[in-house]
Image 1 (cartoon, helix red, strand yellow):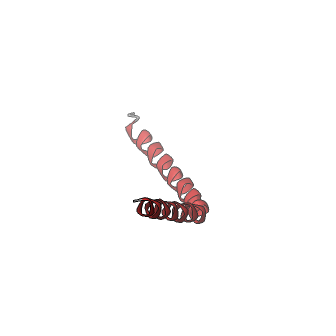
Image 2 (image 1 turned 60 degrees about the vertical axis):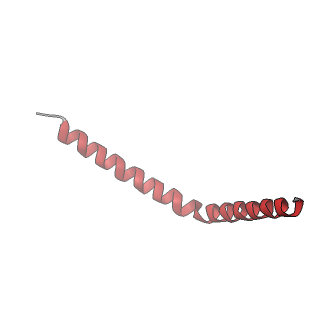
Image 3 (image 1 turned 135 degrees about the horizontal axis):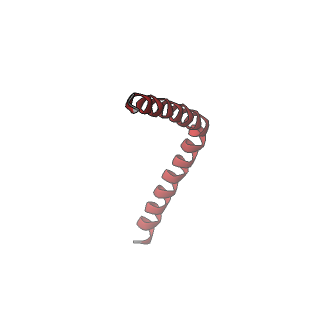
Length: 55
């Protein structure tokens, strides 16, 4: 009896579980991530505008 098939099965189920958890977290956090990302973009734009204004 080799443990390889059991181990690969365990790995697969773990990966699937992780994927489900990650997907759940992603779906939950996506609105916040979009907000943070847009804020970050606005911050970058303001920084570049400040740099243009200073020169």
